[in-house]
Length: 282
Length: 119
Image (cartoon, rainbow over all chains, first blue to last red; front, side, top):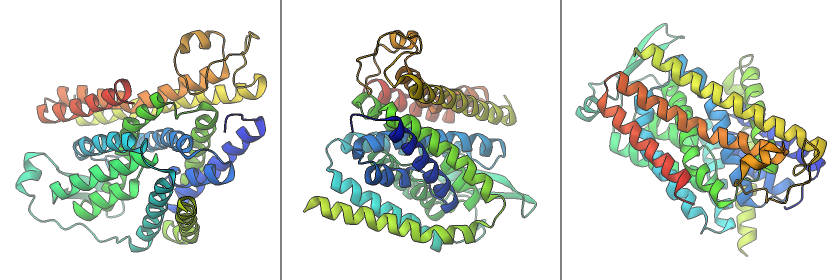
């Protein structure tokens, strides 16, 4: 897409707005929905879609992280430590992306969307096991506590299986750099699943890390000429505004029931992306 | 620096960064409807620069070109997490946490390398 008209500018903005709202209601980022929308509806080249998406990911993550950091739910030490893994992973992903075929990108994107949908079903809300912190966790200062409003007290926690979590984070970074998405689902999986951190701490810290991870690959996309403002500007504005709107709406309704409503949307988008990758490779 | 002020500082960097970037991007996007992406709000000649070219940004900003205004906003957005990490280096250093000052410095180095060296 070389030429844009005021109509397509406005269209991209509105579609990104919807992606932001639905993404935030469905508990996934906007990027994962905006790339399918841009490529399918507007025929945008997937590389420009990825370049626009990664920029919008920085905007939504930084906006939300600003609030969570103040609430002491984000663990800045765990976040910084794991950013060693995600930023190097993202750099690798962004470099590799230049050599990967569009159909493989669509396939990967489809799989990540389906994984996100699956996570909504499987999400367990078990409380944290309070074992003795491991030697490594103490050495790396990956033990802390957070104020839980619902339980009305401080909940102590410490990171477990740190090498496994670190490796999973590196992979999350690769996926983020490759596809231009936040890959929050993979980050939460690493922290909540592998490192056994409390769910709230995992999702807030994941959000905190997403912006920095995205910046590591966005710089590469920008110097490569994949960040076209005619697409990236309406996408960043639309997704950001949509995410803020979605978060406001969520305060009025129960998270879980809303997420179930959007589950079929995620599954459909995931299957569509996989179908497209198969169609492209023939 | 106490942890509370550290958190407020990091939070402020993020909020201010996103607000300024979003405002610039919106300004450029809005102006594009008036004079076109490559026009000029000052009524000067249309630019011939490629939309994905971020070079000679100052000159095109001087003409108030919508494309350049949005580009500046996108660059500011990219700079926001970098500034957040830089602020964290200072924060950990003031907390005298050498281990995390070092960890954060490495992350900052990775970011700067990805932005200025790799492509």
